[in-house]
Amino acid sequence: MAEHERPFGHEPPAIATRRVLATGGVLALIVIGVVIVLHFALRNAVMPYHAQVIVRPAPIPPPPRLQPSPEEDLARFRGEKQALLSYYAWTDAVHHYAHIPLSRAMEIYAQQRAAQPKASSVPAAASSGAQP
Image (cartoon, rainbow, N blue to C red; front, top):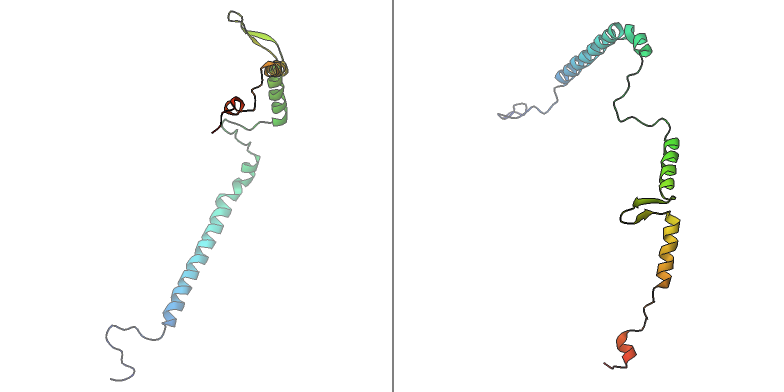
C-alpha cells in the first residue's frame, strides 16, 4: 500500500484550510451586513422620533406606588400607635373592660407580682426530713 493512499472511511490528516477560511469570511460578511442594515434602520426609523420620546410625559405606574415621603408617614404611624398606648377608654362598659395606658398596666402587673407569695426554693421532700 502506498503512503499517500488512505484506507476507506478515514479523514485526511490535514485541515482543509481553504474551506475553514472561506466559511469564516462568509460569516464575517454576514455579520458586517447585519450591522450595516441595523445602523441604517435605527438611524432612519428611531432617531427622528427621539426628541418626541424625550418630551413625552412619563406614564403613572400602576398601584401600589412608592411613598413620596416615607419618613413623615412613619412618624405619623408611630404617633398613632403611641396615642393608642397612652389613653384611658372603655372598651366594653357593660362587661367592665377598659383600655388603660401601657405604662399604668405594667405598674399594676408589677404590683400584683410583688403581692403574690413567693414559692420556696427548698423542695418538699427535703423539708420533710425523708431520706432516699
